[in-house]
Image (cartoon, rainbow, N blue to C red; front, side):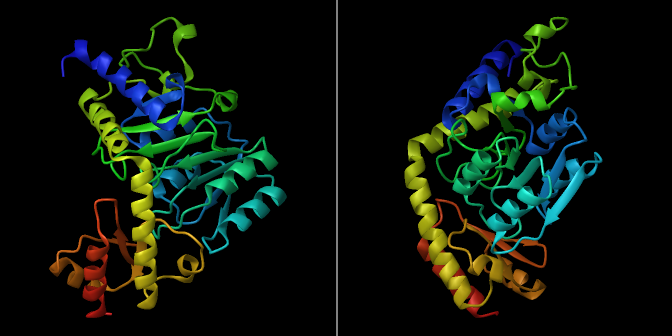
Length: 316
């Protein structure tokens, strides 16, 4: 894309992202991926903050905190995750909760209304969320949520491929950061005029790929056309059906079975033999942790899940 058109494309993508997630465009940062955005952001966070993480959460969420010397408390992922979080924040002096809204290993999905209540009960708590496995699965209103920073790569449920992602930042949380990243490459940064360099522009210090960001804009418009309510309804149907079938086959861990609701990501018990059997039957899956991860999006069907269950019955 010609440089003369790139600036307009990036501005257009910013506005589309802001509208889609109800976040003012000035509080949106376009980033190549979640990992880059979070690392840039944490360069400005005081190491005196005490951070709460979930053990075995997505490495690109946990590792940036771990590599910077923050005092960290960890929680094991159980069926009672929300109660554990509340107790830790109440008793351990936690100032930052950093968590994936949907766990990448097994698909456990945190209750968003719980995070809203958590923010009300502990208004000084910073809630930083990885939405990579969440955004694109339901309507999400950032401005009216309890989350202070939402980050996401867009290759997953947002269907945008690699090279694009986003960070959404609440106005009231910016004072907790002393931003350090600077650069001339971002066409909207003003060299030598610090007063014009907004918070989110520190997260865009270099050139952005306008074509990749254009893919993000295209995907958000596509999802809007399909309808997020319709997508959410379909995903809930798939999740309920898949969970019932996989539970019957005794393939899910207790932390998943015991929870009321779940995402469309499941990690099933399975050896290399099971993984190879799925692959031979043209089932796309990923080996994650001690199991095999299966994921469904709105273009999947109940019939496909039934076929998957029949395939699994032959090997488990």
